[in-house]
Length: 199
Image: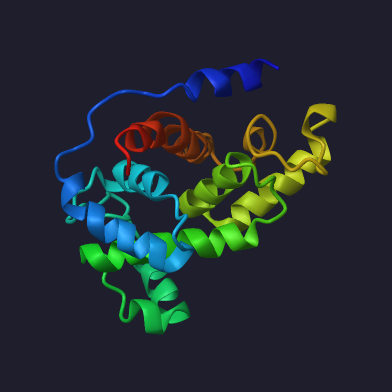
């Protein structure tokens, strides 16, 4: 119950600044999202994800080697480009158009593979964003771990991300903390900002 209350409190729209450079990419992100997901694409959510990943900096480089607006690791960029050669062409994570198209494409690829999570606009997105940040295999391992030791509050038949699977992992403390903060920050802090701005 306490976890659910926290989610509700965090879901209250968070007013704040959207970086000015985000508007440079707004039309492109909308086109790419709708091309991959259809007219009902959650553009505001993808904008929140780009905000979290790079702060809308096309030349962003992380200390671990992630690149561009969508912060793709070189190996992931090459893999997704090979998976969708007609849509993505050669991997180019420092190219804004490529990065935005690859982000929405990869999110869709993950979303389609996480059907075991409740599709209520919250839990499945939590799992999808966690997988984008830390790998699909890790999300599946975490779900198995939650089912094995989660107790009554984490019934595997319910397949909830928040207050259930998100609490279980065998990752290092730092990796666990980063991975669990990632979907929460996007869904409960940044997404409401972009939604309020009518992205």
